Image (cartoon, rainbow, N blue to C red; front, top):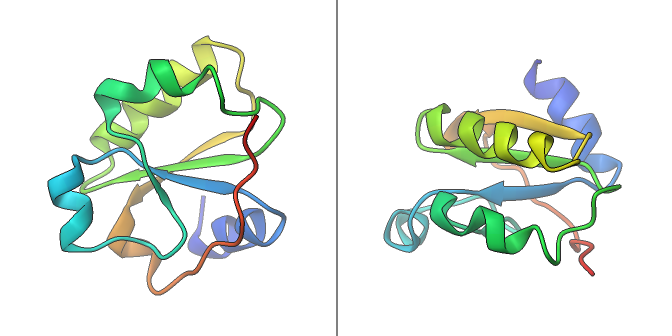
Length: 99
């Protein structure tokens, strides 16, 4: 998946979830992204909408791949691993949709 693909998914209303720790998130993040640490992703499934595209990001792509897999196992079908948050550049995200 290319950055252009991810930009198109974001333009269509995707939610970006940054699964790094709050401390890492404070150092830098994508404007408009949600910080849901990997350890909290299962709890977040109670209020995330399954029909909204989700792009997971972290520092290197490893935790975001784990989060993607966890979401998919629980019925989320439009989940994409965005890899490193910093590799996506200066993207801004609009309003996120939640339950």
